[in-house]
Figure 1 (tube, rainbow, N blue to C red):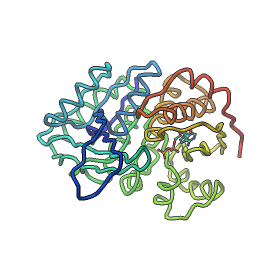
Figure 2 (cartoon, helix red, strand yellow):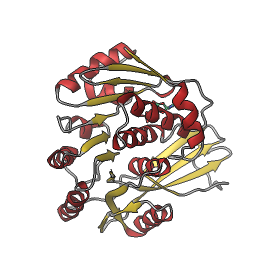
Figure 3 (tube, protein in one colour):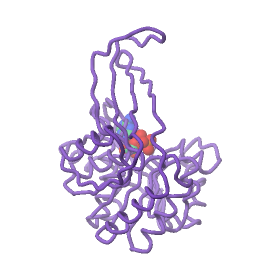
Figure 4 (cartoon, rainbow, N blue to C red):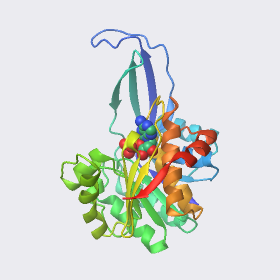
Length: 308
Ligand code: ADP
């Protein structure tokens, strides 16, 4: 089984406006609330690939109930820790189909009892998990190195830990308990404190992460595909050009593809092909965390992987 952690899920509301004018009253012509958060996108894509993930994390208040209900509707198994605060709402205002302005709430504050409850749930589900994916930011009130604790719990149970986060919480969690991380160039620059101008820079900057024990690194590069590194290989994953509609959630979809491959004992190259196919398919649709199996079948044949 794949377990997916989302500490700070949200209701994502999309408002489409002809033109976005600050300081005026405006009427939105399209509102589409969805259950969001990077981990939930990962879980949705794993589900579409045909596996049943289980979601953990924190949910609270009416917003939390809404998110849980949305997951139940698509039959995604979930066992969130109920908290006293209210889960957050994030707004995305699309201005004339072009510019996107996002307003992201910080989300509720978590206390020690919430963390203890989460850990007892996690401990149980790790018994039957092969892979754990944790995506997105920590909640307010959690220790900044909390993903390190999650890594230690995975290590004790022999579970492969895939972590997709950024900033200090990624930096503080680097250890030999990380099976895979997937920084993009911007995140890698933050993590390595180096300016990255090309693939060589990216590879050189990432090598110290392998020395610190990280087993596998995918550097996602949007339309330029991915660079992969572990102690044995450096791969350049080349993808075909596509007509993109919305790349939000492509990184999450690629994590889902990789996790699915690991669960099903795919070869490393096949995991990378599925990861990129999922990221590409997601980019073809407006809906975040939606993939289409026909696209995937096509892309799997077109992606080329070469030793760098
Ligand atoms: P992140 O969210 O980590 O920044 P990316 O935007 O790099 O992730 O997207 C993850 C994957 O999705 C890429 O490695 C690629 O396979 C696919 N993808 C993303 N953007 C595009 C694009 N513009 N054209 C083709 N594929 C894309």
